[in-house]
Image (cartoon, rainbow, N blue to C red):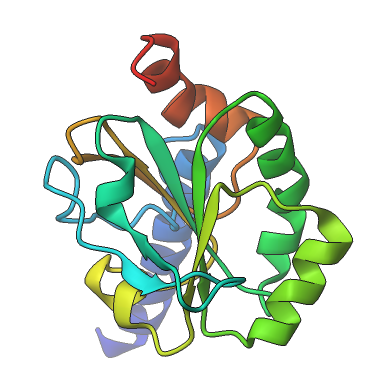
Length: 178
């Protein structure tokens, strides 16, 4: 009996692996989609210095009445570099994006923005993760959509691409809720 347990266990693992791959291929399962308790709740406060003007505080309250994106990024994050061009495109379309530079140095962040452009209307500087922890951030990039009442409607872990934009974020801006 025990000589069948190992092959049966191996077969079960292969079947499970095949099911997960099939669901991923159909778009039904994304391992990056980690549930968050923040959807439908008031956005946590942002209250950190501006990346360029340390005496100016970037605050959630400054965005009240607008639909906007919070994009958490760092210069150490390869996916952040890849999504940056699309964030530039969105900013040219008048999409308000607040950046949160996370676990970084000012100098490195300044250098990246100087090379790639600045898609953000404000950039909070969060080297010690005080804001990122409040927002439940576990990796970068992560992007949140906050509505005009200050409620988080969408969270996306990973880079923002045209497909992600169309599926998750664009409908909130098409409603004229800016």
